[in-house]
Length: 302
Ligand SMILES: [Zn+2]
Image (cartoon, rainbow, N blue to C red; front, side, top):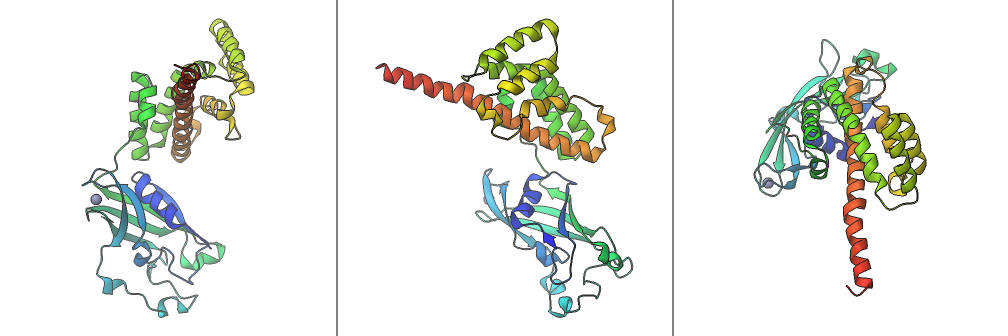
């Protein structure tokens, strides 16, 4: 049996958009409740932007039910084969909707979530492994898109608009829409990203500049990516793979060959990688360049 950690549960509540679902328990066994009981959702910590203080605070969940209704006794778990308490008598499956209120530990402001916990099999089929999923089906105040400030500054106006639309699509778990917008952004921005990389201070910079000149003549993006792949600066290869090539690869293949769920996952990953690349470039190009310049001036007595 594998159960999500409190920090994974916290991410699910605070960072995932409406209708997101995640596996809470693999191979559920009845030795404890493990997200099949409302009280398992109680008193979980998570970080969230407080709607009252407008800054990130620690919240704790409270299950909004009469405590007595949901009391637990040892009898609930003592017989390992008996139908678990909150499984439906008829369908023998779990389908439990829980109203969670998150309470700000600093000012007591609250946010509300509706979470549905469900099993992917009936209790009778548990020998084949019964998993419990949780899905966020309600949130108030609603989930807000929060574009990254560095990304906002970096993208040209048109692509920043695409980026916001991609995040709106992500916020309602509309994968195909989000993926399409992210592809558009990569298509428009990849050359500028490579140009920016070529102005950074590293060994392969000249090679990338030459490849960019060839690209202006032959427009062979694949060739340009090959060169970038060979000479990418260390700061961008720390990940063990080349993020530029990974982003570029997203442009091949039709969107409709993927399910909405696959598109959603791809869009979420692109968001993370694109943000990382843009932040790295920003760091090297502006922040480190400024420090280098300052050091040089100081060395030369200003
Ligand atoms: Zn607060």
